[in-house]
Length: 426
Ligand code: EPZ
Image (tube, rainbow, N blue to C red):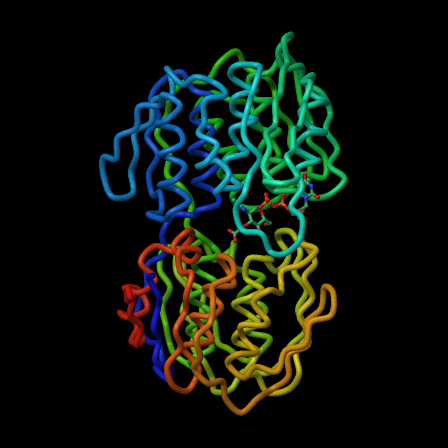
């Protein structure tokens, strides 16, 4: 089994270059199903979620060529609806974008229920279904409680008819899925209480280069004017703000000085503000940030919220750093019903963290010590890497396939910054 082995104590310094954003690349890859023609997608990160999505699309009849390490040519002209392989689709929550894409192109969809990181809470898709029904689709969900599997079928024999969709809860996936279903629908669609994340804007920008007419992405009201069909285009994915934030926190936690290149500083504002709040220096350049530690960080209070709030996908990494902060910190998870499974792993390393519902209280300890810990999900896994970097002694992390879902070459990038980290296969 592959593991990461980290010897703590290194002070990170140097430069790291950020890749394309996983959570923008995934919907954009599935959005190619809407296009009868060739799309060229650039700056695609080399992570497991992407390679799994490429395999799913190839299974469905897409012709895909990797023309460079981060560039794919994708032609979905011959894709057939409802042909995604269940055993692959169930491993990857983002595969549910096939629902919107198949519905938009074929007016019907059949996809197995999503899997992906389960933080111990439910991750429903009721808002996606509400949106599809508002656009004229009949949706049936079949679930098998025993195997926790099932599938979703959508059918819109009269095609997609534009309408208003109001989300009860802000949902990134729901906003994207409705966008995918509506772009080639008849008439206009308005999504209200839409998610505002940068990757929503990236998907809208990609679709508009294919001939869609989407306005308002990045605000909580998105307007879509249905067009007859989409044509191929060439598009480059935005940099990954969560990968960037992860290296920012690693630099701060080790009291280092690191330049993080190929970022959009505006996307990092909430992370930058919080790091400055705990005493870290963050210098913003046009397409980079320089993070410099100033000794022990101070404790803070933090609540995760949809963008532009502090990202939920950065909360485990922040908690790992706060285990060594001066004082007592409060971390509130404001997006998911439960995302604290990593707390038990941090306790194995000597952290003083108490979780009660949506809130964790993290008190200062003199030091963390190395231990054998598990990556319980993607961001929890990378939080254990940060804890390992600042712990005394050696930390071993198992189940690292989670980390590889969202981080390209984390061992190489951290080693280049001076970390003592290696991947072993025992
Ligand atoms: C996306 O998940 C990301 N995944 C997640 O990143 C991220 O944490 C999340 O957005 C929030 O930013 C991908 O992009 C592949 P949501 P998604 O729908 O779309 C509830 C990572 O680490 N909800 O915005 O599934 C839901 O339960 C991953 O890269 C409903 O109640 O997130 C949650 O509490 C982890 N009904 C909240 O909304 C619905 O129909 C936000 O979920 C949909 C969602």
